[in-house]
Image: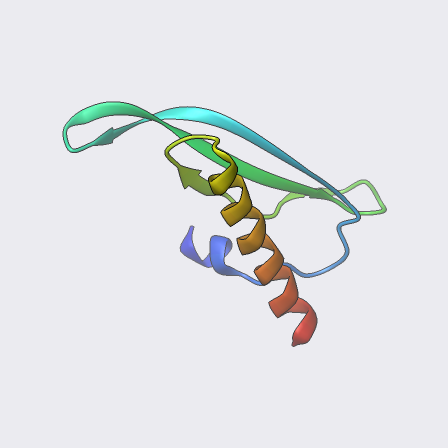
Length: 81
């Protein structure tokens, strides 16, 4: 999973969309809900690919911003190599 989440994003994905959902996890012996953001890219041939995944305490603006910056950094790394 770590290799997938830290890989450079290669190829062109002109049609991105982002979705979030909540999942239940165990933290410190308690069951809590956390937000999961999954960016999906669609290329010009219509192929879809999960471009990453991020976990956070809620769908707050700061979490979305951090997730988008992480994705942008992965795209930048792929383009600069």
